[in-house]
Length: 161
Ligand code: ZN
Image 1 (cartoon, rainbow, N blue to C red):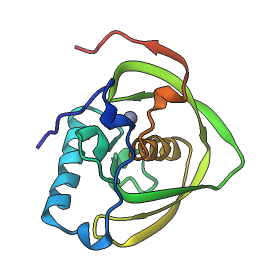
Image 2 (image 1 turned 180 degrees about the horizontal axis):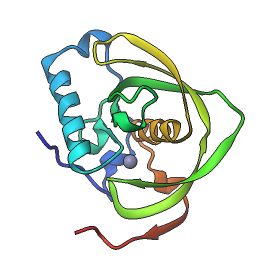
Image 3 (image 1 turned 90 degrees about the vertical axis):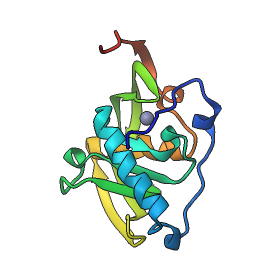
C-alpha cells in the first residue's frame, strides 16, 4: 500500500520517533509498515524514507538497494551512527517531505552504523559517500530533524508533473 507522505510545515516532522523493542519488529504491523514504506519510496522515486514521513512516529527507515553497499534494499530500525572518518562533505539533497526544494548539506563522508534489521537482529556496518549521506538524512528524520535546517543554498525547482 502506498502511504501518504506528510510535508512541511507539519509538527510531526519535528518530533523524535519512538524506538522499537526487538520483539516488536517481527509483528505483522511492523512488517506491513516496512513493506509499505518500500512501496511508497519506490512509487515516489525517493532513495530513502523514514516512518516519520508516513505519519508513523517509529524509529524505522528504508533505503533503496541501488544505493546500499550490497545493492539490497535496506531496513534500519533504531539506527545509531558514529563517525568513521574526520572528513565531511557538502552535497545536494532533497526530501519527499519538502517537495521541490534542494540545498547543500554537510555530512560525514564515512560512518559506522548499528541497527536492527527487519528480523530484529543487530547489524553493524560502515557506509560511505552517498550511501552514508542517505543514512544520515533518514536518521535525522527519526530524530525530528529536516535537511532544510542544516542546508545552505536552499532553492526551489519547478514541480515535476
Ligand atoms: Zn527526507
